[in-house]
Image 1 (cartoon, one colour):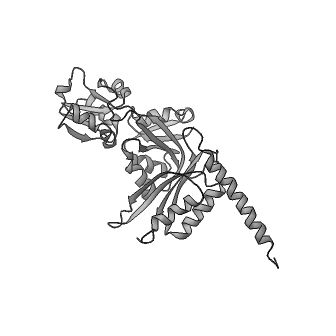
Image 2 (cartoon, helix red, strand yellow):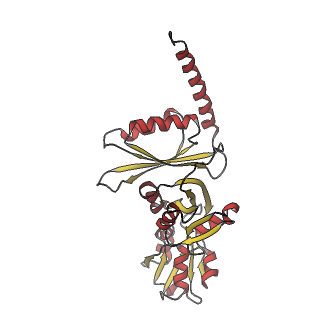
Image 3 (cartoon, rainbow, N blue to C red):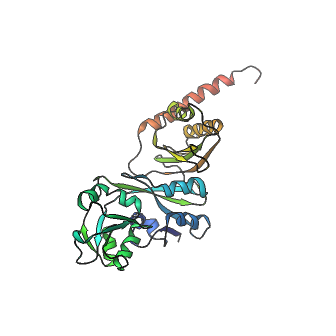
Length: 308
């Protein structure tokens, strides 16, 4: 039975996503107080797997996750899990909207309801917690009078709160993407996979990003995400976090990664893993076939070289 660390306490969206996977739900689940600590205990071997949020449809990248994976830990993504997310305003029993003086939640959740807060609680103080469930626990314990929590509805049941307002996220199609990470191992290709890499430049020069992107375009490899992140070494020094369709076992992807690694300072491989959702577009499979055909053609030409 694998030991799986996740962002706690009980009642987080992370736990909800984790429990949506039957094989993971059967593991020994260990709630941990913060995202960096989830990754740290996994790298130290105190947990077999870590489970963290990495991207939200409204707020974008969960920086604490991608930065820790890029700079602080050597872990590999094993799979992704995507679930719909509904934020709710939780309050102690009997509290009304007029009584709310502050809201408490993890910042990435507060950002998802900013328009609702502006319309319904203008000027309210925003306070940060390590997780949505931790916010609900603190409000339920009476530690912060006049404070409401932004959290999943299930947290209200766990911590003795009432749901004062349901589904207050600013956009209805709010989803969060989570990843499972481990110290080693690349899952076998499924035919519907993603690969995540971080590209570091040797120096800042015109066209450096274009040179990277051309490698994907030339092979018709679709990028599902591209984001620049500061390297934390000096102002203006950035790396690029990239998600692409395909697996390192695919000849086309392997050839692309090889060329990129040869052109830039470094590439950190964060994993090739099963993608969530429906099967990817056929153009990637078609591109793989065309690449094999072109490779066979080149090999036949090279085989005709005299003296070989």
